[in-house]
Image 1 (tube, rainbow, N blue to C red):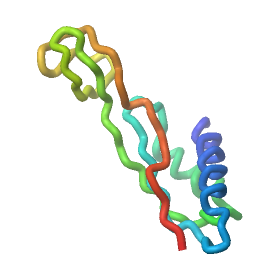
Image 2: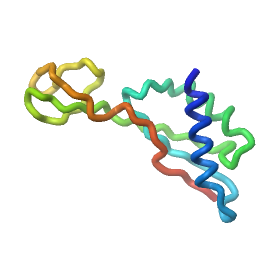
Image 3: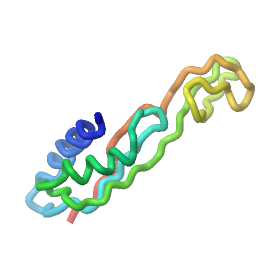
Image 4: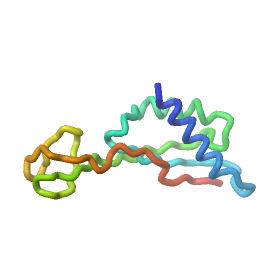
Length: 113
């Protein structure tokens, strides 16, 4: 389950950002996850609870924000949202699409007290 290692990486980033004397606890972390990132959200939620134990983020809410799949269509030269990597262009039906986004995963922000 690579979601566990993803959460371990997130924990390192969160701990580094929260390593200040005025921060006692992290209450919420918002994570942007692209449609094509290959992340199993239920598994990530479970891993979050396990990996954050003993850190300033223990008990923090994990909010997962969905990002769409985006591609450039070489037939109509428009940037379009797609559901699956191999989908045709929803505007012109063309099949020559270059993915431009949707495989990212990043921390958008976090709330601390």
